[in-house]
Length: 329
Image 1 (cartoon, one colour):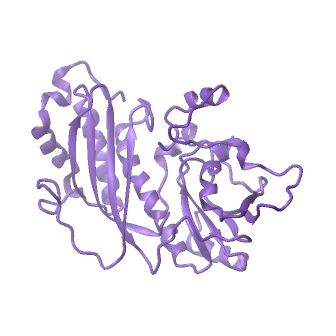
Image 2 (image 1 turned 180 degrees about the vertical axis):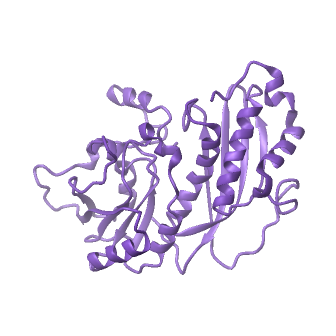
Image 3 (image 1 turned 120 degrees about the horizontal axis):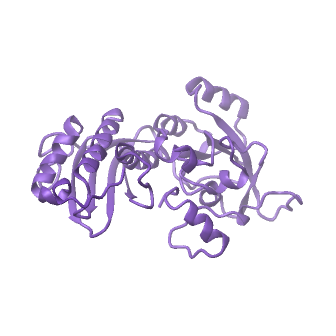
């Protein structure tokens, strides 16, 4: 559904800011508590937390994260789920969210209503109160940005640092083809899986795969080491080759390092009991960077996931144009 209209009476301009905010409150329904705990005051009042708090922010931008082929309800859901995936990557759970809109006056009211109703359904599903936000004008564009407050679900926070040489590398689900399959907006954030991993002493570090494994894995790699991947075990979506699995992005799966001394079979058996429907794959391990490579070894440097503000040329420009909104940005 195209989010813009040439009919003034069908656009957000027909309402103006004050009436639009009242409509947003109505569209969100029970997903937003009454002021001062929700929309309607200068700030929202939140209860104190006994746990360490987590904070993340992500946008959805028309032409970047979605196009007219994605239903507005799915866009609203994706906005929240992108942020929930960040919490999952640290073993957290959500507490509250605020959303900021930058809209062209030509944005359709019907589009925006469906967007908020999709957001509300997802917020209720994951028990995330929408407690406030802001609305501003952006000529010619449509950007929705959500800031999510969360808290640690267990005894510790898992971060991207902590892996060591000899640790095994695991990933959940399958990789690649997020745009063609619609996974980039249909995915389910791995909140339960992230909280479970944070309780396992053998898990040293954790992150989500959003910009492509080739871009994200180096952030997990310890100093003086490199990732030695087994391409035969790389879990790929049907029809995807190794390059797609490494570079496509917007997988929103969990990537983690497991202590090399942990009994892998025992760990995987415990995972299957906890999450029988979520695939878990060991894709390699961290080895000394100075260790000689096999002649046919995969070199991550030969692959490129999505990177903000990176100048592209030639083949990469063409690939970027084809995937214009299929990456986390």
